[in-house]
Amino acid sequence: MLLLRCSDQSRIEQRVVVNTRCLGTNLTGVQRYTLEILKRLSLAHLELSPRCFSRGFVGHVWEQAILPLNLRRDNLLWSPSNCGPLAVRNQVVTVHDIAPIDHPEWFTKRFAMWYQMVVPRLVHRVRHIITVSEFTRNRLIDALQVPAGKITVIYNGVDRRFCPLSPEMTSQTIEAMKLPSSRYVLSLCSIGPRKNIVRLLKAWEQIEGRYKDIWLVIAGAEGSELVFDKVLHGQLPPRVHFTGHVPEEYLAALYAGAIVYVYVSLYEGFGLPPLEAMATGCPVIVSKTTALPEVCKDAVFYVDPCDVEAIAKAMSDVITEPDCRRMLRERGLARASDFAWDKSARLHKKVFETLLSNK
Image (cartoon, rainbow, N blue to C red; front, side, top):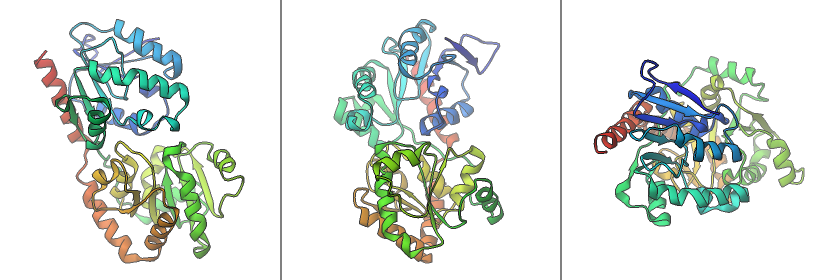
């Protein structure tokens, strides 16, 4: 049940231990954050994760019961994925958002109940909390009464591979992924009510007749055809293409080749995909909610995610106005350059070292 991975094999007992249970699941924003920080964390550390069954009940048992038994008293545990063992006080937990508390209706009843039981207790027991935005920090303070001084905000970064690419590179990716057209509006997201894809599809339905050579490409949502076929009763708009999982080597070019990237999520603790899209020079439309305005500033086109007509108009405006796309491209590149994983990793190291020295 226990997998040990150490950054320095000559020292198997490190003072910083990382709970890497989350890396046993599909790659999403939380997993990307964990991997990017670990790649750059210039601090001797030990990574602990279950050999299998990292999700569900067995995963919870490992995290709450088995993981604590493998820690020494002087170990500082870092749990980077919203949750951690309640028995370990000498712990830093990264809270990306508290969506299961703010909107339990978006999750399974079992998951929402578990999160609501564990996380409010955990954030008061651990020594320190890292959040990826001021929005999440403020939600912890307001909703769970966490002392402000217990929380450090450290923004996510953007990997250097997300950058403007040549037309040849984007064309190769379009061909490799078998996209139906080289002209497409892109939305990259996972399945879930908060991602608001149903309204995006309804907005596309309003404007698709004007642009016969353009497709809406929805990427990264496994099984989307079945999910949305049920939601929309089989009435999917014309020229909608679901890619399913996108291999990492295609992701930057997929962003870079899009006419516009649309992210109308209802709730985000940070919002990494819009930032990655901006870094490739792709114009971006996002929701004016939660952490997205904090992260994107004036570099994107904002919409009310509950207003289908507003989403449709924003897409149409960006598609038809070259000056708008040019402005969004320039502002997006400038804003994305403010975010770096190297900086984020240095700030994580500073938090850990401060706690180790003040034990």
